[in-house]
Image (tube, rainbow, N blue to C red):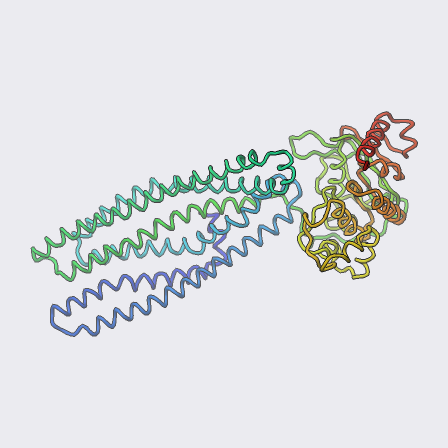
Length: 576
């Protein structure tokens, strides 16, 4: 309950106002049977009923106005809570470390922002207030029943006690079923999102039915748990309704007998029966809101778990920039760096020593699992080292913010994801202040000018992963990186999906960039290796050798094998 209240606490004033309105509305409802008794007593005494009828109309008007006001107030509050929680989670996701985000299915994280926040809204903005209001109305109804007749009140309390015991037994099972249903919904979102991203692979593997069945397993599990919760809720509601109805029947029979005995007025019996019927409202409110509260508590726990994600420091907390480093100081350097993707995982790189000169092209090669991608993750500070240190311009990474480090680097992923938005949005992603001339320059460098000009909207054409080819996505990503004019350009093989002519142009671009800054590539093609000023050979997480293409051919057997493999791969990939 404390977790749920933590979301509602900043809005205590509004919640109290909503509660006050709810209590006023309940007061109008509680007054109605007493005014009805007034009408009946007036009839029995042959006096005017104008005043009690006007009082009933006044209660109707006031009660309607209060209900409308409360609805708007709590509805607006609920949307504000959802907005604030969603804003907080989205910012947390983007401040989180890369391993913290990639270690969970994307769809599961999306589910927390979408469906879990809706459950939270109902619990915080409505259920808390309605629960208190229902309890007050419930107690108020019983008190007024006691004013009318204590014997009939005893019958009512006995029925309510039985209902309360059954509710206490059923509520925990409802909460558990709802929580498991939401867990499977999160798993469903994660698997479905990943499968749709890989739809081509799914179809090419003829795995449509198998993958659909895998996802449907979570659909069925979520539905089964939800059905279980619905059955328990139906049981709880049926018990509540049946208990009250049975109490009304007993009250009617016993009350009629007491009227016959002359110890109870007919008007008092009618008023008591109206309260008995009214008692269904607070009982229904309590059962509904307890169920909603249980779902909201489960959602609040999952949302609060987002705060456990490891985060990078805030971009606002930046140390003062250091003085310019001497020209001979490496722009990037690793000294005895060891790193792993978890405290209990085997190191992905061990004791790596590597210096990246301020200018020139450095290629990193090695078999799968050699640690090439981990090297880039360390340089970009997606991953923190367990031992050793990294330096930028001779200054240790730990003295710099993530933002300061990444401001000096540009990175092109091998998968080259498209950023949601237009061509212009994608290009300006890293440097939003760039001019139209800057955009045209980088588009020309990567041979995309003609393609962009042919699009209906030009630079403002919406871009999606399916509207451009893999090679075009690579060139858009490279143009985005070049636009930053970084000190270090990190390329996870930016020519892997390009044709020969375009590849040649990109290599010219890389050579041009390496004259004024550092270019580091993970090499998957022979042309990239041959063009490099320095080649670093990695094996089993260590730097095995380094040198030029000619030097390594003469001195390193693994490098010769890699070159031969790259040569064969290029021959195989060459068009016939």
